[in-house]
Length: 383
Length: 182
Image (tube, rainbow over the protein chains, first blue to last red):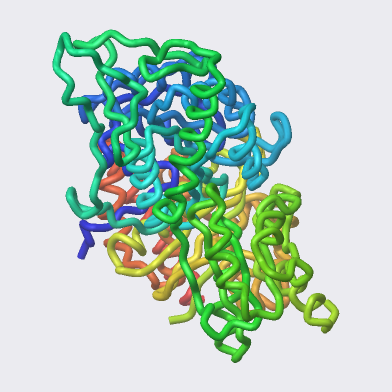
């Protein structure tokens, strides 16, 4: 008997379906391995759902189109990989400054530069945080399995709308191309955040950058009844450029605080066997699959190993990491880069000397055996 | 059940990745099992080495890679030479008897079948070589019913290709049954 509830599709297709579930209105992008299936799937599916699909000439115009469409009231998405993500950094900063909700998927491959198009890496974690210039806060989410790719994609749209900010979804080649079982949630099963629109009537002075008491900024669809300015320059509550120090200060504080002060609300993670753990793995994305594989196997042999899997990378959930690491002897950060999240973990925990890195940077998915061998060395058992 | 790890290997264009996807998808959609399928590929879509990993199990599967396959499938000499040492002791080594020569391997159960020759003789189109292979794999492992794969082929392929693929699937299954009798 066929089970009609489940599908067997790639992680990239799950991401595309989740974006449709979240109410995607426009996708603009330029295909790049290993993210191409997101564009490919949406080229077919988005018009079926009444949305617009645009293939752009490059990634710079892709994010700019996404920003423009978002201003007109649509939920918008682009998907890319490292080289395209580099090109998007300027527009990303603009979206932060102009407070434009949008979602940017980066299916990470090996870098730098064009690097390893068809192989895995997780080297864009710091680029996601600091790739665009200037002080800013950032939201970046990630996932290791299809159920979580769906959940975090919807979450990305919800956070983008709630906080009027771009949100980055950092997937990787392994989870993007992996096929596994997924049950697509029913409508209503995951709550969606709709665009908050202003109640200010036509002809009444509308302040696009005047936060309400709860900090949210109601938007007005660009091209509709209100005329207002949007700029990457420091601006006043009407959106017009200003250099007044008190307004500049107020805006940068607002841009950072609206994310940092609510970081708990954006923090998503999973804990596996952490309660009595003596060794704690901290991992995310494809690497977390290998870490969890090892945890489940070694638990059967009585080893007290646990995993903290991060779904929110930025704002970095330092409190969650500190708490999970408080009672363990060792923390092993499992990732496919030269220690980008490990740096944050070291900053978060009380004793950074007990934090180690288990990594692979050759384009291959780190294996449970790789992790186990590093663990043996840390435990003083040799390889 | 035992976790079953498959490594499909061949050259780009032979369809080993499609065969791997169909096997895993049938397990998930028709047999209520868990499966993961991944593939490694370079820049060449055709002619280069193609590899796909499939794991089928009734429990959650985390690490998706296959390091030691229970079933190693090689459709080219190059693939055989590259992967033959990885096979799990006692596992199945499935090769095409014309495409892979002398697959001498002590600690595996050898299944040498004339997929290509049979497909060319009975159907005359090399494009269904992979489905013929799939028929034999399904019959060999018994994790997925042949009818489930047939149903999946009807759902996934356009109708004009149903007959030729279903025939190839049955041919592969028959090859395996004949092999078992030997």
